[in-house]
Length: 106
Image (cartoon, rainbow, N blue to C red):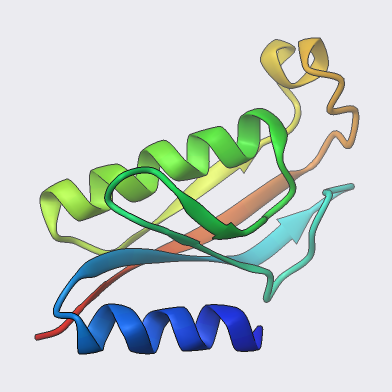
């Protein structure tokens, strides 16, 4: 795990705050990042790290905020196959499965 993300998670726990660790757990086809890539999303929407940028990262951030709101960790599939991805210039053409893990002090 990236040292900056690990340190940030430690701070979140020490400050009794919350965040979501987004981890790419599987990829199919061409994707901007591979399995194991991580990004931390804070309740205010700020991020640390990247899972590839563009509309897929925006979708991951929205799902992370949903995970925080619901207090539940889950997996989600990000597609780089649809028209939105093409419109944003994301021509990778694959899919990424992400795990959204809620981080809190308890």
